[in-house]
Length: 419
Image (cartoon, rainbow, N blue to C red; front, side, top):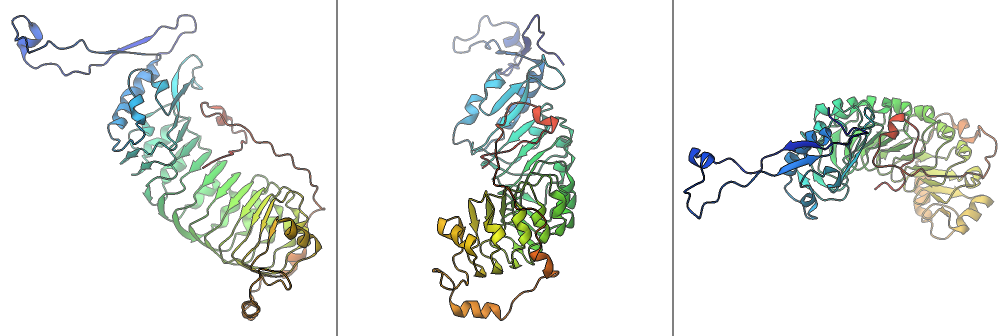
């Protein structure tokens, strides 16, 4: 492909005819003697592209533009002419295989509210695409298998759209993919277990209609961020989650149908900063191993069937800013937990703690105690497999570069402020 020379940055020149040729031979050969009301054809517009790579994607973009059925923010009005790099939502840079070339590297349609029946024939035809973000639009259809031929694509975000059907298996074949966000759509069925062995940094599947047990190989995932909330996942949290101890940073299991007791192995997730599993049917006491989560800041287990004493080692975690245990059946707080409750960090409303305001009625608590749930290996709930954690935890976020290929190096990055 042609590119811009470092010494002589010549302009790649391509002509595109916008007006149809008149079919009358007399018009094409001789304009003399025509009626004054008939004008000769205008000179076709000539588009000058900075690079041949941009010229090649121009008809792809224009073809996709023609499929858009709604554009309330008039975004596509900017998609005119040869300056593709200044189209709203399009970003250019040099590709990894040619530092002197200019190509379309990134697309960010977040919040554009565009409607189109499909993305097929668009993103899968952009050979140098590295990032595609399309949160909060009205795209639908399927994902083309041709997307697996994009060598640089490492972020795919089609969240908050109208996609439906089974899990889009095509995404599993994208060679460089490290960030997958398909939340807030209408996908159904099951999530294939191989998703949890993909080399991803972030996996967002929440707010769909997936229905299945959490897979046994859940802990095989190398992701930092895992969100499965607002689906219909059932059964216990697999003990294999221990295997993700070196990477897992944020976990969202809330608003599913999870059951069983919290696994002791959760206490080994030494990188964990946020864990939400509220609004499920989890039961049993809190394992004391949770006191080993030295980096934990947000811990939400509200609206479950948990009971017993809130472990003091959990309330002693130095980085906690929110510990939500409301709407359970806990019966006792120690001094550290009481202090945490008074400070507003611990939310323990609607439990069964005597002499504490805002608790369940004695009748509710008695009825629950008649049908207490039991956990296997109860001795493990009192074991603390670590020393008392220190309170130092410098948290430094990494600013992300939307236009670039740097994440192909698979450096661990954070994704603050995701919608």
